[in-house]
Length: 195
Image 1 (cartoon, rainbow, N blue to C red):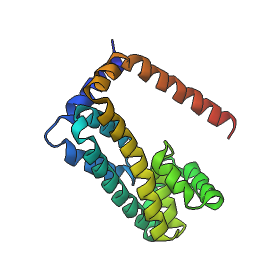
Image 2 (cartoon, one colour):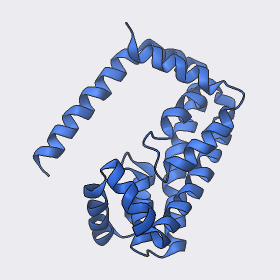
Image 3 (cartoon, one colour):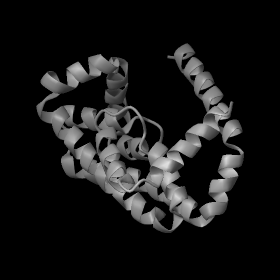
């Protein structure tokens, strides 16, 4: 059974749905606050399914992700004890929040740019930025830079590769999927050993 190919096909099917753009905006928004699945998982297949609209989809993902980041910032700023702490406990993020606070102390605003672009959970940084009362305007600018870099890179590659890239990815989806899974497990083990 081809697990990752089936998932890929399902993502492409969802990406072609008539409400996919609204779903992308919604997921981009809530992923910046609490949703555990990264926006890129929905955005990448959408961009591949509609390469001529990839850059406009990147803009939608960026705008709604930053708006979600702003909402999370204010939740951290004004509702840390009443909302964020129960959320952190529910998802088991206590260690992540403590680590994010250390990153803010070490890297300052740059950690928001890095989290916006990288696999580091952006939602953890948005909530922590508010709780630590980070300056709002630099937070927004860093969020725009980081999120736009991620989504426009994916969108640009999808536009450049087009349908040929979609078909090539499908051909190698099982290899890619299992490789990413193995790397994730190895990365987690290494992280646990050196924590």
